[in-house]
Image 1: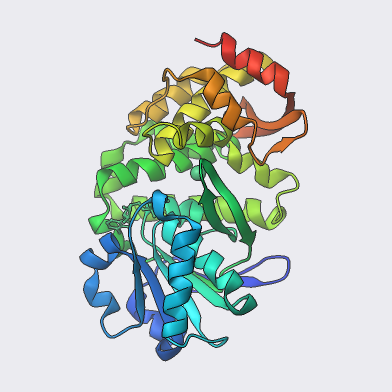
Image 2 (image 1 turned 30 degrees about the vertical axis):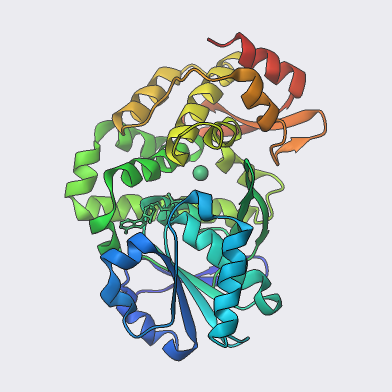
Length: 340
Ligand code: ADP
Ligand code: ZN
C-alpha cells in the first residue's frame, strides 16, 4: 500500500489512500487492536471483523454522546485494553469522532487510526484530529484535537453506502470547492452524481483531491486560529439547524451555505449565489428552507466561533475564495431576520 506521511505540529499521520482494511495487518499487530464500528458497517462487512476485538455502536449522531463514551470505556476495561492498544474506528464521522475522543482520554491517551467508510468521513471528518461528542443541541461541544496514527481508505466500503450518505458527503465537497478550489467547483458543475458513482477512478480522484485540500488547510492551522475556520463555511447556521430540525448534516450545511452566500452578497459583494445553489441542487441537496429564525439564532449564538458580541462568519468573496469575517451578533441577527 502506498503511504504518505503527513506531518502535523507535534505528530504525524500515515495516509493510505488506496488501501484495503485486510492489509492493516502489515502495519499493525492485530492482537493489540480494538476495532470500533457501528451496527450498519458491521452488518454489511462482518467478515472484515472476524476474529478481531470489536466494539459495535448503535449508528447515528444521537449516539455521539458521553453515555456511548462511557459504554466503550467499560468494554475496553473488560477487554483489558492498555497503553499498547490501538483503537481503530471503522465507520462514518460519528464512529471516527468517538474513536478519536475515547483514544484521547482512555489512560490519558492511546494510539488510534481510522478507516473512514463514508465519503463525508473520508474527505472531512476523519481528517484533522478534531474529535468529540455532542451535548444536548450543541454539536461537538466537548472534545480534543489529536491526530490519528493512520488513515486508510478502502473504497470497497462505499459499495454499501446509501444514497443519502453520498449526498451528505458531497455537501462537504461542494464546501471545499466554494472556499478553496474554483477548478473543483467547475468539475462539480460539469459532472453529476452518476459520473462519480459509475466511474470509480473519477471518484477516487475526487476523494483524494478533497482529502489533500482539507489536509493542507489543517496543516497550515491545526488549532484553528485562522485559515482552518474556512472549513466552517455553512456550518454556523448549519449546526444550529441540524439539531433543531430533522436534517442530515449535509442538508443542514447546504442550507447554511446558501444563506452564507446571501450574507456574502451583502457584505463582500459576492455575485455567484445562483451557481452555488445550482450545484447544491444538482447533488441532491436542499438550499432554501423556512425555519424559526429566532429559535435558530438563539442556538447559533452559542456557536464555538462566537467571540463575545461578535461572530466569525465564513463568507465567499468569489467561488474558490472563502474569507473570515467578524460580524457583530446584532448585525447578523438583523441580516438573518430580513432574509425571506
Ligand atoms: P457521517 O460519516 O455522515 O458523519 P455516520 O457515522 O453517522 O456519519 O454515518 C452515516 C450512516 O451511514 C450511519 O447510519 C452509518 O451506519 C452508515 N454507514 C457508514 N458507512 C457505511 C457503509 N460503508 N455502508 C453502509 N452504511 C454505512
Ligand atoms: Zn461538516
